[in-house]
Length: 234
Length: 344
Image 1 (cartoon, rainbow over the protein chains, first blue to last red):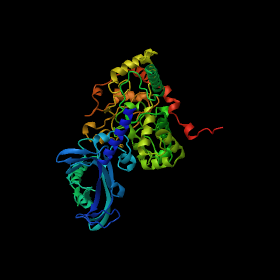
Image 2 (cartoon, each protein chain N blue to C red):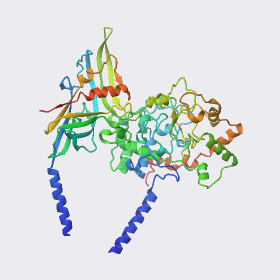
Image 3 (cartoon, rainbow over the protein chains, first blue to last red):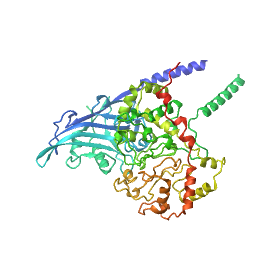
Image 4 (cartoon, chains in turn green, cyan):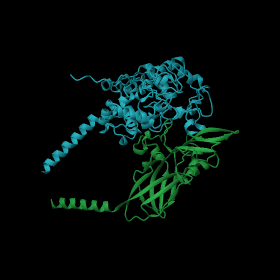
């Protein structure tokens, strides 16, 4: 009997200790256009190549979030899959539960969904196929989705043209998953900017206005987009 | 005290053994290879299988609420679409391929004629979303299910939560499809030494083993690989098969090897349904092979059969018919779910 009471006491104190030794880190993705907040209904954006454009969709998966101290992994999120959707504010911020004494200076995450998860069947939560980020004619997640339209000069006439970039794929050589590592300082929050103007500027919309399946171009564009993510900390 | 514990332990063991035997929904036929489906991630239950069965037969899954999975996969024809070379979907739109027969899917890793689908759970997304098939978004299917009284009940029974999600919907459809096991044909009973082939069937079996079994490997009657079986490509459909997915020229004109089980009822044959009769299929292999770079190796050497041998081969193929499977009530339209008898 004494033994059981001790066990219960141990359990309670353990729990208390444990809950006290956690702190929350707010990880926010901040979609911007030319360094100000991205407005999906603004059709007057301009880029260096086209006259005016509108971003209608910016959605992407972040997975396998890790914190590193120099190059050593000191924390890893379990079951780490997050769909970030510029149209849904609540998806932009995620809270990570860290132990208090954690020392780190880097954050690392994947842009997209790894190949093992891609062949593991139907999943729930942010990975549910109803989230509009799963291909149907061919299995696999869309890692990154950018859609919109632009007005372009075609032989002196302004022409409205839509663009769709659905980047994904899980089979080599068309495996566009990117790993992003960024330097951070220990604060209560980390803000990661992704500037849509910078993405548009690496695409020539005159020549290329859609990518809809796993291909070489999807891999190349994903590599370029991965470099655009940047950390903003006060 | 000790004695009691032992007796109690033995009792528990017996009980669990008894319930697992009684409740086992998926039983792999004896001497078959190990299924590739990961049951640990989606353990079968009676309630989930029943939900999947309802979904399989429900036209709610289509954009027009008129086409169900069963429209192109009817039980009496081994869950395929007979009489149509290319299956048709919503508003009578014609697709580009012959709907495959559904059975023994727990052993399949890749689905569709070109292997575009990498897991049974996500297979249903393809026909549901295709504009020429069911023309609906999975998001809408889930919404419709959430609003349905029948499905709220079925989801609650299956998942202890009445809300449909994409994952639950797809996993339930998988569960039903996994139960579609065909292993009770005459061929199977001969293999189990419970009956015997006729002389003609036996002769046909020998011909089959010599000429067909490298691709149509027993006991599934498919090696589950992608092969070019020498069909001259249809100039209108321009279907390159597996290469569409892999983008590898070595996969040009390769299509998934279909099972031959229940072939008597699963006509028409081939990925584009170009042959209506088994005799046409056999004549293709003896005299219609088009040689090209990706032709399946075993077909490079001509298959020569006399007309008697062809008849014998067909006789053997008919032993692959599994009437029990084709008429099994567990796989049929769930009228008791959609039209429950009023309680007196």
